[in-house]
Amino acid sequence: MPTHFEIDHARRLVRSTSIGRLTDEDLRAHNRGLIDSSDFDPAYRHLWDVRGVTELDVTSDGLRSAKGSSPWTKHTRRAFVCGSDEVFGVARMAEMLNDEGPSEICVFRDMSEATGWLGPDLID
Image (cartoon, rainbow, N blue to C red):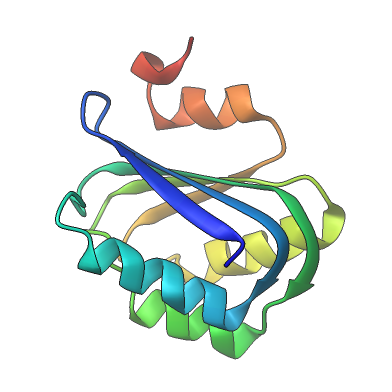
């Protein structure tokens, strides 16, 4: 799977990274992995680095399914950091689909802007 996550309890942050090909199933597996992790806290902020995605096979149905199985609590801040225009466009679709919750999503091209939006304690 091209996606993995790390949980930083000190910063109350989940850092996810995706590389290579990203699919609808990868989104579902990522959500399941978080839910199944005994360390996961759904109130933690989320920073998802998708700058390494080189092939995108994510559909609007896959985005809706991921939203429906989202493990995050209401008002949890989630930042996606994108490299390519294609990934940025799909992440913006996820942001728009999420306008009514369960969490806040914002899409960025710059890592420092994303971490600044998530909270000043993340800026190194």
